[in-house]
Each structure stands twice: as structure tokens, then as C-alpha cells.
Length: 134
Image (cartoon, rainbow, N blue to C red):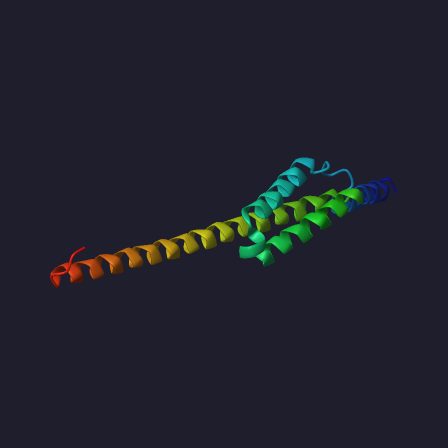
């Protein structure tokens, strides 16, 4: 009987350990640092102008940060950590897309300016070549 009791006791201990690990009870501390980092990334995306250049990614980052904050209130720290990491990633993607769009726009403007200067130079060269004055 002792061996059955030991086996049952061991199985119960394993089941309890698995249940505790699965539920996350006490398994991770509140992810306050990750929450702060995620909030900073979302704020940086707003400051970079992501509303205009990456609105979908910015909305996703905002939504995930809001859900992470709710999970913190509910003390679901595993979910809060997961959502905060996703919010940070979405915000960083929004920043990257915004920077790329701004760089592309600046390059387009520089090409247009260069084209205008080239056209002006060609007009002046034609006038000078035709015997006109500058």
C-alpha cells in the first residue's frame, strides 16, 4: 500500500506543478520594464508621425499596449509581457515604415529639385548657344 500511496503522491505533486506552471501563478514578476519600453516605443512612433505613414501598425501597437495595461491590472503578467513585447515590435515597425516613407519622400523631392536645376541649365545653355545673353 505504501508504494501506491507514494506513486499517487508523486503524481499529485507533478500535476500540481504542471497546473501552477500553466496558470502562471507566481511564475513571472510584473513586466514593468517591458511595459515602460513598449509605452516609450508607442510614444516614439506617435512622435515620428506614424499616424500619417504607418497608421495600421500604430493602431495595432496602441491596441496591444492598451490590452497589456489591462492584463497588468488583472495581474495576468504572462499575457501583459506578451502583449507589451508585441506592442513594442509593432511600434518599431511603424517607426521604420515612417522613416522609410519620409526618406522616400525626401529623395523624390531631391530628384525633382535636381530635374528643375538641370532643365534651367539646359535652357540657359540653349540661349547662350543661340547667341543670346544669360
